[in-house]
Amino acid sequence: MTIEHEAVVSPMRRAAAGMPGKVWLVGGGPGDADLLTLKAARLLANARVVLYDHLVGEGVLALLPVQARRICVGKRSRKHSMPQEEINALLVRLAGEGNDVVRLKGGDPYVFGRGAEEALALAEAGIEFEVVPGITSAQGMASYGGIPLTHRGLATSVVFATGHCREGGEDPDWAALARPHQTVVIYMGLARLDTICRELMAHGLPATTPAALVEQATTSRQRVVEGALGGLPALAAQHRVAAPALIVVGDVVRLRSDLAWFHPAPPAWTWAVREHALTA
Ligand code: SAH
Image (cartoon, rainbow, N blue to C red):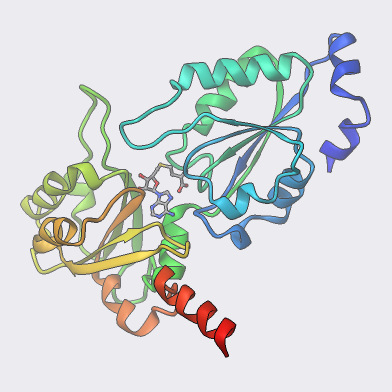
């Protein structure tokens, strides 16, 4: 592990010698801190400067040393607190000043995380970096939601797609997403749920295709709303599903009735248990 080794040269001495620091682009996973890789956990425990997003779980941030400098560069659907170019520039500047920087991102840095844009900016600036993979939210949702991504007889392929298109950007290849025997997981799709369901049906998926919305997967606030593709927008409105959430479409959703094992306790229940413990 190099971060401990490099820390031997203090950032101040390194900066004085004109040596840049190094950046670790770290996947923070979908929420549950137990899903971090050992490498990510070790880097977090030794971090001095950390740039993180809103999507990073509280339990993950709790692993940072108290003295670590934390910079929230946030990003919530439609509320970008720092433009991507500024994040790239900040990483380059901090590392250029001699700091070792942990750039902590939700899920996996290279799955709809714009991690590659940051890595390209670092490469261009001649800053050394490493990328540490994380469990992407689709995988977290599959395990903790009881919805396998593939299953013999039900799905022979899986597609991760984004529902959020850049202004004037190209639309997803709906025909490719609407193939049979395929699981489709859509990131950042909630705001366009109506269009997504409509297009998938227009391109051949029956309205009865099993589908689900998984909100805050792997966390104590995980919720799964399950139904049929045709009725998904109405279900989302009825249950007030909010970001971060994934849309899952495919026959594998049917397996959930047998495979759901993760039942996070609602906060009220946790309180009831605590009060019981106090009064018992
Ligand atoms: N790099 C991340 C994705 C970032 S894009 C990853 O690999 O997971 C942000 C989108 O990811 C959100 O809009 C949502 O669709 C999805 N997402 C991230 N964390 C999630 C979670 N815990 N539960 C459900 N969806 C999540």
